[in-house]
Image (cartoon, rainbow, N blue to C red; front, side, top):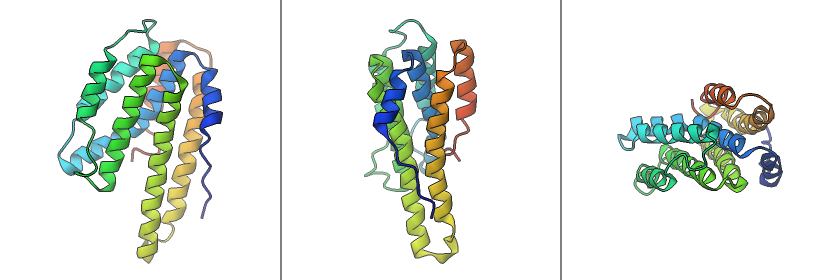
Length: 199
């Protein structure tokens, strides 16, 4: 079995502190882009939720990342809207319910980042993506243990964790490069909407 890279929040926090506040928001928004399609899968499976609401909120976060105005949106109102569409895992106790909860939690944390610019919220968004991959790994491992036809899945799932860690590292590098904010934000949106978690 492939050994996953450990998530190091302290090291990530140090790296994020070196970024301008707008770049930290781009970092968090990019990870949310990676996660967001999981919510769409949840809605399709359960017929509950509001993908368009979370899509809109994430669009606003992107706008705030490139806006010089610290008060570019009503964070309280967006967080209320976000909370209304996060599923209760007691009502949806399957893996998709947990994934949708992760998506909503990450976007909620990104909104806190918009409000405060505090690095800890960007770290929490990254931790959510990592934990989502670990949950997938744990689920796959249990399937392997109960069904020999899943042989090899544990390698795939561990590689998923590795890929998420690689994505976080790559994203930090992208956000550290000089260049126009609008162009970088657009490039990141396209690139990270195709991340390892959204298939």
